[in-house]
Image (tube, rainbow, N blue to C red; front, side, top):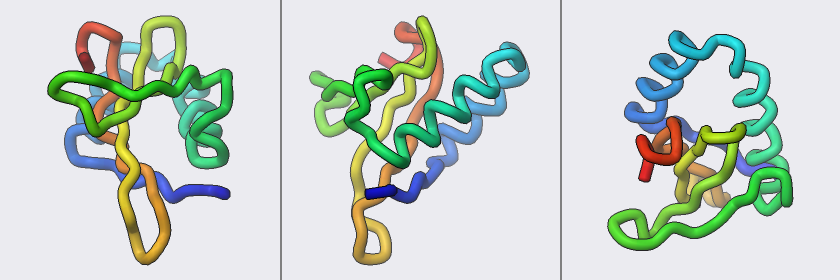
Length: 93
């Protein structure tokens, strides 16, 4: 089941900042977002739940030290993925 990806304003800022500093990772991030939409539990994403202040959120890997933080949310009667943050492990956690 494909899920719609919704971008929060913070994710949009993070993505623009990240791609400006690391333009060579654009294809990898695009592929990760495509895989996330198609199957968020795919083993290549290493999707996991978060704890602490991000307890209701999930994260997946978009490269060696690149993480995408998201949450599942209803949207127009279907489950969607709200993208919240993108950055290194230390930046997003």
